[in-house]
Structure formats: structure tokens, C-alpha cells
Image (cartoon, rainbow, N blue to C red; front, side, top):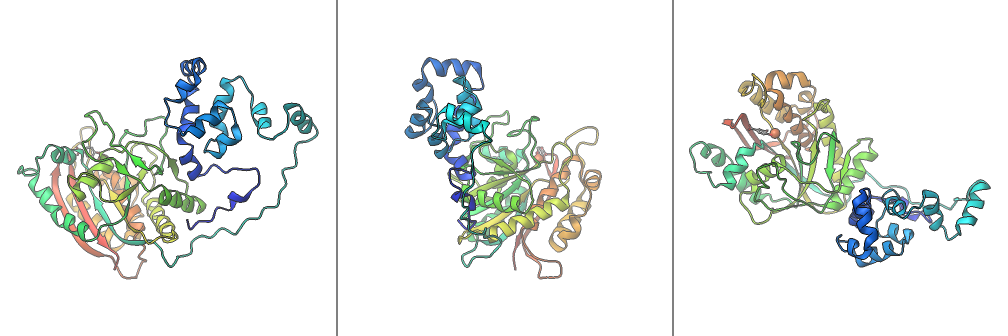
Length: 420
Ligand code: DHB
Ligand code: FE
């Protein structure tokens, strides 16, 4: 695509990037399975039968069976994963490395004892092209902001939209559905938070981007929502990751994960009950569960970096960035049920008119004024940063604005902003 990959031309070297990772996903997952003693035993007992349990290509299975590590790497394997296969065979990293050089293990040892191999090579690498807006760049037209309350998903799934409690909510999204029909994107970068569904307490990425081709709805305990599997956009996701990380914006790469109500409820609200989601979705998860959580400022800056990434993707795709969560709510403790309509509406005003200023609001204010779970609102600043308008320049056009209390324990907020 539009970001050059200078690392593709280094002789005898394969860089494990998003494309290789995608190619080798199951091969590497198979290797990981060998970290369990039971699996090693089953693999050794009948290699072919064990390999057939994994959705790998025949070429990958043959490369593994032959212990051809160069071929495994060409087919997407990564040495740290393949090392589990080597270890299962009782081999060391030294033996594995030597097996890929074309030298015998003895020759390799001799050379290493004499100071190692000369890996010098002519690096014929083109300059990295980045940040240039291509003639055929992505169109970033609008951003959508919406709550994600699980009870909304349940109301849709159980067809209770016409009940008096739900009517004002679903009627409020009717203009949004019409707007979306008329402004259907190819891809939505959907900024949301995971609620202990994909990420346990073992690993908590501050920012994570979904690079997979698809994301299943999570089973949050009630069974997975009966909604379509979310189709991703691996090429654009890899491009965004590459671009923002090169701008020193660390983001966690996620090659597979389920998506919970934080992502599927906004889709349901905007798209309704559909057979398939009408666009690809790049999930962008923000940690707002365990502190420290990122500042509003950092979220806003991430949005700006995402915009630069999108603008440098050489494709005529129509992209929208959505921010989700909120508004004021607290789901815990004696203060549960807190709603602060005045603060919420001021937040909406400021998000439209002066997001830069709004991005300076401290966590403590979110928690004090909008409740502990009101911190979800920082995610709206990612989407707002991606709108790309500058202070003093023309403001986005407000296509729709909705505020309704209560929805379950929350104040529901919703905005559609279009670039002028
Ligand atoms: C509720 C709101 C949320 O944002 C959430 O993640 C879970 C539950 C609620 O109000 O019920
Ligand atoms: Fe939530």
C-alpha cells in the first residue's frame, strides 16, 4: 500500500510485520500450543493428526513436518514461536539458527567461535514515504458519538424497541439511521472500551488496534449477542498501526479478539438488526477500566495521529471515526446511579466547539462530575481529534444531537458531526 516497506529488501532476513503475522497466524498459534506438556505429548504421538487440528495451509504443515524453519518463516512463522517446536524436539536456539544458514552445525560453531558471521549486505532501501496526502487518499467525512449501554443491545435482540421505556431511545436514532444510509462509509474506525471481555487483568493495553480479518461477538456471560461477526480491514489497520507507532504513538497490536457490547451496541444502534454489518470495522480499544487510564489530551492527540495515518493511505476509501461510551454514569458503590445532565451537555457543547480545550479536563473532573464510569467519555476525544479541524478554523456541522436520561444506569448521549 502507501507505506513503503524498506525492510523487505534486506538479504536473508524476513521482518515479522502485520502481513507476515496474518499469513502465519495459525502456524504460530500451533507452535504456542506446544507450551503445554499434554499438547507436546499428543503432537509427538501423531504429528500429522495434531497438525490437522489447525487451519494451516498444506505448505505450512509440510514445512513444519520437515522442520524447515526457513520455509516456516517464509510462510509467516516467527522464530520465537517456532522455538517452541524446536524445544519440543529438544533443540536449542543455537541449533535452530544454524539449521537456517546452509552451514553444518559444526561449521556454524567454528564461525561463531571466530567472532560470528559477516552479515553485512548492501541495503538497497527506498526512503520511507509517509505523511504525504496521495491523490487518491481516504475520505474522512464524519464522526459519530454514541453510548453503548448493554441493555440497549438486549432490547434490540429481544425486539423490545416499541416499549415505552425504549421508544424515546430508538426514535432518537431514526435520523441517525437515515443519515448513515446516505453517508455509508466503507470502513469505521470504532473507538470503544473492552469491559473485561477480550482483556483480562493479565494484559491491559492502554490503546489497542484490531488487525484481524474478523472479530466475533464476545460472550459476556449471557451468551454472545445474536449479531453478525464484525469484518475488519487488516490492510488499513496495519497502515494505521505503522503510521502512529512511527509517530511514537505506542499502540498494542491485536491479531484476534472478541468484541463486547462496547463495540456491538453502537453498531446495532446505528445499523439496526442486520444480516451483516454494512461496512468494515477497525476496533480501537482504549483502557478506561484499570487506572492509570489515558488522559483526554492523549486521546485527542491519538485521534489527530489517526487522521494523519488515514490521509496517507493510498486508497479512495470512505472512512468514519466513531467514539463511544458514556455519558455520565456510575455502576459501583453508594454513588451508583449518578447522572449529571448539566455537565454532560456542557461536554457536548465543548466537544463540538473547542475539543482542544475540552481535552485538558482532568480525570478527576470526569469522575467527580460524571461518575466513575463517566470516564468512558475520554474516548470521544479520539474520534474528535480525527475530525482534523483546527482551532479558529471552520467547525464541524452538527447533523444530529440527542440526550436522554435514563438508559439503564446512564445518561445516553449521541452526536453526528460532519466535516464542513
Ligand atoms: C451500563 C453502562 C455501561 O457503560 C456499561 O459498560 C455497562 C452497563 C449500564 O448502565 O447498565
Ligand atoms: Fe461501558
